[in-house]
Length: 49
Image 1: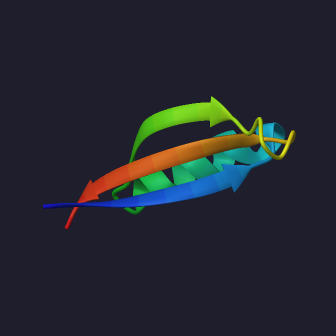
Image 2: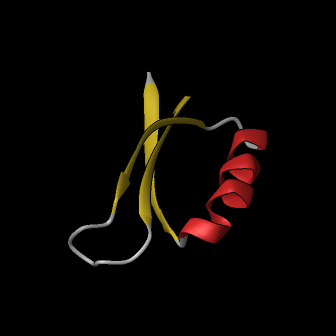
Protein backbone atom coordinates (compact mmCIF):
# COMPACT_ATOMS: atom_id res chain seq x y z
CA UNK A 1 0.00 0.00 0.00
CA UNK A 2 1.24 3.49 -0.87
CA UNK A 3 0.36 6.96 0.30
CA UNK A 4 0.75 10.09 -1.81
CA UNK A 5 1.39 13.75 -1.13
CA UNK A 6 1.26 16.75 -3.47
CA UNK A 7 3.21 19.93 -2.72
CA UNK A 8 3.61 23.28 -4.47
CA UNK A 9 7.03 24.97 -4.30
CA UNK A 10 8.81 28.03 -5.59
CA UNK A 11 11.50 26.73 -7.96
CA UNK A 12 14.40 28.14 -5.93
CA UNK A 13 13.21 26.34 -2.75
CA UNK A 14 12.22 23.05 -4.36
CA UNK A 15 15.56 21.26 -4.00
CA UNK A 16 15.77 21.83 -0.24
CA UNK A 17 12.16 20.79 0.30
CA UNK A 18 12.49 17.69 -1.89
CA UNK A 19 15.59 16.62 0.07
CA UNK A 20 13.74 17.18 3.36
CA UNK A 21 10.86 15.00 2.17
CA UNK A 22 13.32 12.29 1.05
CA UNK A 23 14.69 12.13 4.60
CA UNK A 24 11.13 11.40 5.74
CA UNK A 25 10.87 8.47 3.32
CA UNK A 26 9.04 10.19 0.45
CA UNK A 27 10.03 9.52 -3.19
CA UNK A 28 9.39 12.03 -5.98
CA UNK A 29 7.24 10.49 -8.71
CA UNK A 30 6.26 13.60 -10.70
CA UNK A 31 7.32 17.22 -11.17
CA UNK A 32 5.42 19.64 -13.40
CA UNK A 33 5.02 23.41 -13.74
CA UNK A 34 2.07 25.00 -11.98
CA UNK A 35 0.39 26.25 -15.16
CA UNK A 36 -2.94 26.96 -13.48
CA UNK A 37 -1.38 29.21 -10.85
CA UNK A 38 1.39 30.50 -13.08
CA UNK A 39 3.96 30.16 -10.29
CA UNK A 40 6.30 27.40 -9.11
CA UNK A 41 6.21 23.65 -9.57
CA UNK A 42 3.96 20.86 -8.37
CA UNK A 43 5.74 17.85 -6.88
CA UNK A 44 4.00 14.53 -6.25
CA UNK A 45 5.51 12.16 -3.68
CA UNK A 46 4.93 8.51 -2.83
CA UNK A 47 5.95 6.31 0.09
CA UNK A 48 5.06 2.92 1.43
CA UNK A 49 2.50 3.06 4.21
